[in-house]
Length: 201
Picture (cartoon, rainbow, N blue to C red):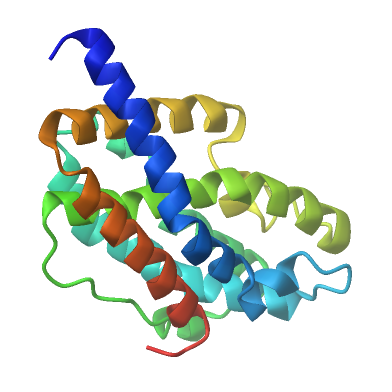
């Protein structure tokens, strides 16, 4: 396939991905912990509850998903974020005992397309995190150096790293014909995180 054909397929894939995951994505945004973060009355406990839940999926992604994708993404070493969550929890008052007892999700067996679906969702939280960072900073007074490092994401590099991720991600889909499998697991991952945050699994 020529370059123009590959680019067309990439664009179609991303469009389909966004359309087909929209409902699952919206449901996650309506999760009670997710919604609490954007309320004017958000509390430190709300913030910690959200981070505590997200940690279990984020660290599992790094431990189980990243190793499957090393050959696809050359910059994975820049995308580890679970340590930021732990630092934010400690900074805002979590004890070592609370940190040690944080539950961690187990993905189990994943194919490369499965792993890509998971990573798409987790990387997407970095973009949404910038909006949450602004709100948390305004309401709770936290900063990237004091309790809100995770939502700060990649800082000024957030947009650049998202674009580089999407570029490689979409190209792999176009060249491998694995788009349907990637989309299917992205949908499952949105639902998984929604259920995990509310303790349904």
